[in-house]
Length: 178
Image 1 (cartoon, one colour):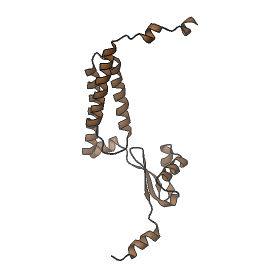
Image 2: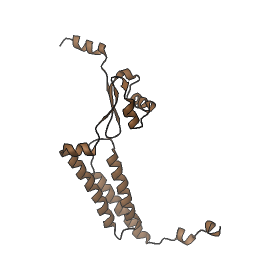
Image 3: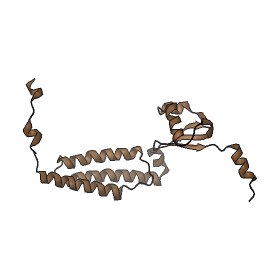
Image 4: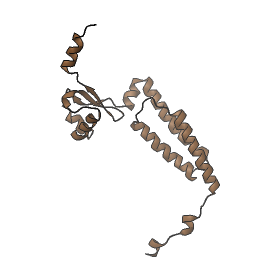
């Protein structure tokens, strides 16, 4: 029971590494990560996909070792982060230039609604409840399933909605003189 309550105050409060070195490591790693994320990892779309989240998690893990002196040098931490960024960029390049890699790296859209009818089989595969889907529709200004021509779960995890044209609107458009 004594070990449970025993606090090693010297280990808790006295640094084991130079404070100046830790500040320098933190500064170099932060600025390196900032420059890499700002100038190397430019994204075309405004959404974050699964691959992007994976890269961020891997970068955080790799950078943590550079912050905490697990590597012998900050250079090793920065090199590991750059290696992760290289592979992410290379895979994105491959998927852009070759359809095979695009299909391999990004799943095709999954149809959730077709002409106002929910595809419960596809919803079940992705664990999307009816209420969750209806909530996504409401966020896009759709209150009734009959308003939806189709809704898809996109590769980035977002749900895209194509609204059905109302017959009155399309008839009015045809009758307008040029």
